[in-house]
Image (cartoon, rainbow, N blue to C red):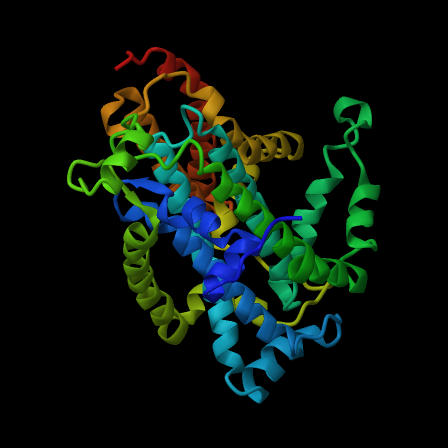
Length: 411
């Protein structure tokens, strides 16, 4: 048994039993962050804070939500919005948070791509981050089903149909499984079993998995450390020694807490101004008007589309035939995971200093924005043509990536 001595403070008592001082050093005061970073490096903290708000607001909404196909719509749109004190506020907070969390994720992702934060030992940072994106996507999709409105129902119908796989004549029918769709739904069409399953996923399983992967994501940052704006290879031990010796001006790093954390808090303050402006004055941004009609399996909406954060991948699927579209969709969902291995350049530097890669990055960003806009529009006329070529451009960019990065000169 360990030897204990009389503690002179609560902190000393806790440290003897839990090693809290060691934990503080590992996670805060001796976790070193490069000085050469900007506000975009605060997006991880903004994302964590937004997830916390989603959990709290979700708990309040859960108190009055009824996971029953006959009662779910009214429990959200009538009871919560009109009969529960400040129920409207919690619903607006949850809806705005669900949209903004993806805006922050996309900013975080493209920041990582621009600065090469997936290279030189940081592959696990990128892979765990992409896993978080997948889990947040599953959490958002399952939550979108719960109001049981028209778009909830039909979006659920369309997305679960993807699990049927390819057409019966593709690969001899081996990749066609209508039974899988029925197993996911628990019925031939979305109904009570479907709603109950997605309710469980949204309020229990997905949040637990997200919390676990957030811990993993922060853990992957500990050894390779956070990247910096110039991609410089910093000797963190030497720079940290300078800081601890009092030579803070010469040191290239700062401690996470309290120095970098104070900058995070400032960015959070600015972000919450935007957040609560949307909550109080522009909440319709996160609420589709079609979803204020109760689900009706006999009345198909004129134009079915997902939430804005899924539109880019939906548009990649839409311009093609079923089999080709499904292949395109699978490619789009998985290719970002392969980024650390497709980028063959040894250079860790911002895209602005990487020649062809800089052009590749900006075309990819603009293409994803175009795909997002096209995904909301009806697939007809010029919109279908633009969507088709935007999807082709997306594939071409990823095919070209290994080639243009192999041609890049080492710096």
